[in-house]
Length: 65
Image (cartoon, rainbow, N blue to C red; front, side, top):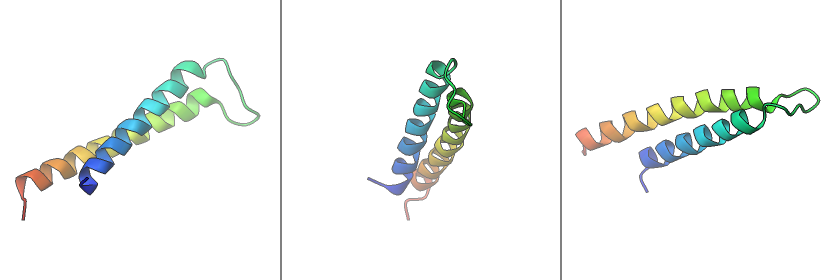
């Protein structure tokens, strides 16, 4: 699998994991961390990585050399 596709899939997995933490971690609190806030951070990080993966896929698709 091309590195661009791996970046895209990793970003999507991070986004989905963050979404699940955000949705189901609202009423939990672990000593210092709040899972819903960590989930929100992971959602943003996953979205940025997904956009970068899309950019790399499109760049590789446009310029195969």
